[in-house]
Structure formats: structure tokens, C-alpha cells
Image 1 (spheres, rainbow, N blue to C red):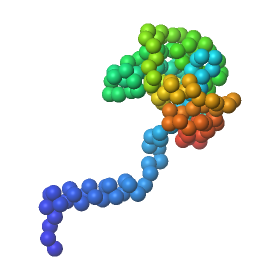
Image 2: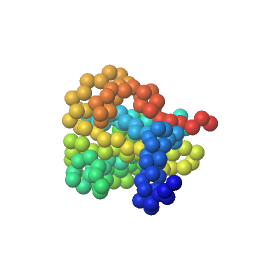
Image 3: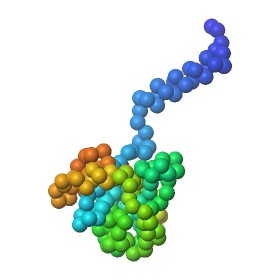
Image 4: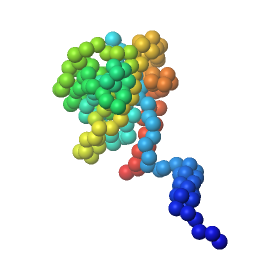
Length: 173
């Protein structure tokens, strides 16, 4: 039997790794989740996906350095913390408004672009992390016709609050 060369061995290892990884799904790997958005009285309401023990501690509006979405670099347009109510702590809040948060860390200084990014600071058991985020298409959101408890995702799907939370893989306590 002929010995494998270094390049043949590397190719074989790569093939085995790709085959193995493509045939399984990581149990605790990142799962793309969508935030939900709706317009209420001229304000943007956000429904962030949370596990039952998760809590919102703050939120930000960000844009990519190109002015839309979020690219490699981004700029914060607005930031706030200190939820004002249980509903806000549980993941439904208004951005660019002091109706949901006690402390406005950075007031918005320029108009919102057509597409921007909302990110949340969440946590449970006393630990706060930079957690989830989602994109907003403001022009699509302004024209959406939504029923009670319905939110529009960036991808155009209409979801209820319960469906938004159901996207989470939550650890059983």
C-alpha cells in the first residue's frame, strides 16, 4: 500500500471534515431569528425573540457605514437602556422613543434611513450581554397592514409575538 503524501492527507482530512459537518446540525449553534416590527402611532414597535428567562436591558439603532443596513463597520444612531415596564423587559418596546426606556444614552441626530438595524442588550440571572439584532425596512413597514399582535419581519413574514419567541432555542431549567 502506498503512503499518502502531505497534500493527499490534507485533502482527505478536509473531505472527511466537510462530509461529517454537513451531515449533522450543531445543537447549540447560532440560529437565525427574526425580530418583528410594527408601526404604532408613528413609532416603531419591536418584538425581540426572548427565552422565558430573558429580559431586555437596552436597545440601539445602528446603520452600516454606507448609510444602510449593517456592514463591516456601523454607526449607532440611537441608544437607550432601563426598561420602563414589564412589557419592555419581556421584549416588546419602541425604538427612538423615551416611552420604553428610562435613559437615552444617545439621542438620534440624523433621519432614519430606509433600512437600519435594531440591536438589543439582553440577559438573565443578572448577566447582561449584547445579544440579538434584526434589520428594519422602514418603507415596507410603513405600508404594512397588520392585525393585533402581528409584526412584520425584515424578510416580509408576518408573525405573532408567540411565533417570534418560538424561534429561540431555550435551555430547560
